[in-house]
Amino acid sequence: MLSLNKYFRRSFIPYINILSLILVLCQGAIENSYADSFLKTRVETVKSTNLKDEARVKQILRNLDVPQEIGFVKDVYVPANPRGKLIINIQDLHCNYKAQKNIAAIIDYFTKIYGIKVIDVEGGSGRIDTTFYKELPDEKIKEQVADYFLREARINGTEYFAITTDRDIALYGAEDEKYYDKNLDAFLRALPSREGILENIAVLENDLNILKGKIYNHKLRELDDHIVDYDNGALGFEEYIVYINNLYKQEGLKKEFKIVEQLVESISIKNTISLDQAEKQRKELIDYLTKNLSRFDLEEFLRATVEFKAKELENLAYHNVLRRLYNNMDKRGKTLDRAWPDLDRYIEYLNKHETLDKFELFNEIDKLVELIKNALYTSYTQKSLDHNLRVIRLSRNLFATKLLTRELGVIKKYEADFNSKRMKTFIAKQANRLKLELPLPSDADLKEMEDTLPALEDFYNYASQRNNILAGNTIKSMEAEGENVALLITGGFHTQGITDYFEEKRVSYVVVVPKVEEIDVDDTRYINALQGRKTPFEKMIENDKKIAKKNN
Image (cartoon, rainbow, N blue to C red):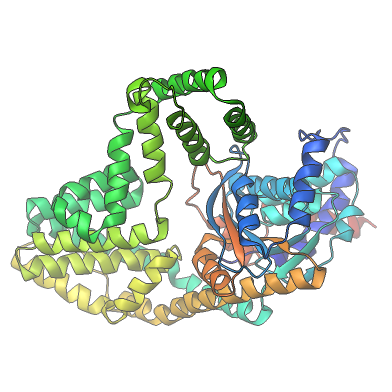
């Protein structure tokens, strides 16, 4: 949500020069794995494409890919009558080392394979001069120092790429400095009280969970346990969806929650498939088509197969080509579902799962859970407790600055309910009724929570306002450089607001997510960097400089 671009330059340069004297130099560079002819084709395709031609843009984006070991394409959008610009928004996971390395690799991939020059990033403003990076000492030392600062969250993946690349890029900060500084100031105002407030929120949440065990009926308690397990990552998404689906009447699901129903159907189909058998049957079908297709259809089949193996044709599109070519054959014998049943079900699964409206899906899930809860309440106290649980969990995410974009609307909806004293009164009343002794934060602690809330509201308001600024400034940087394609690297919080802006302006976009194997929940390094605190290494270097100066 907040990047560290402004901090970086004054911190990085001195240590490069010092480490040049003490690190062992190693020669050699990483060899590029992309064939020159393939690279030339990709670059020329993007550079020469008329991005105002909707059909042509869709064709380009169908072929756009990201190596699966570093990330994946999450979303693609091409408007009717596109404006003639394409922006690839790479989602940033701040201070996650593996994610940052993969972001650098994704940028490297797009700049080389697709010839993209303009790179915009949150956390800075205006064109960033990268010539001084190229004048720094030995490449190996430069990479080692950059890697250290990346691990310590002093730079991000975009800055790491800018330091270590020798490509001609136009790096821009996409911020309005005034709004970024206001956003950072709001965060820093809330920071001193954050740890204590989160401890008090944990006490209140634990109290409510104890009351839950006494007040909820069995089904309501079981539902809430599943919600908590899903939110904490202990329950998989598909398991969660199947569970809540089984709690709602099926005829209502089909009428009122069509996207959820589509997802449930895709999960049901997937559970009947042997993926090993589907892969084996696909090879058999490919062999059959190779031997039996007409010359004209064989050309289409071979072209699609080559594009699929080169990751230029997506999984769904390729399997639909296979199915269509087989079904259109005059002498095909058995139907596909009888000849290769697992493959047929796999293709059916792809057509349901890959065409889901992912954003609207979560809106439907929230509405569905709300309906199920309303049907399970047997008392007003249960409903009040559930409401307080939802508020305290949102409060936890709010004060931890981990709110999802879609939760902001919920926060505004329940704004009047973020009253910790009222919640304390509810807990005390129910504990007394049930003869329970529950610990409660002091009134002074609750007042600190109330007093800090405005700073956090400012934080999220400024973060939301930055969405349009980040998107708009990226378009301006493209125009300044005379380029129609750009990369924009921002935190995932901004994605929805940025893509809404692009859709309003008729700008085509792609959302790319770096591969992350593990989420680092410790944000200490990130906060230390925002506060300007030095790492042990930085302190050591500063101390050595003082000693050297004193000896001289």
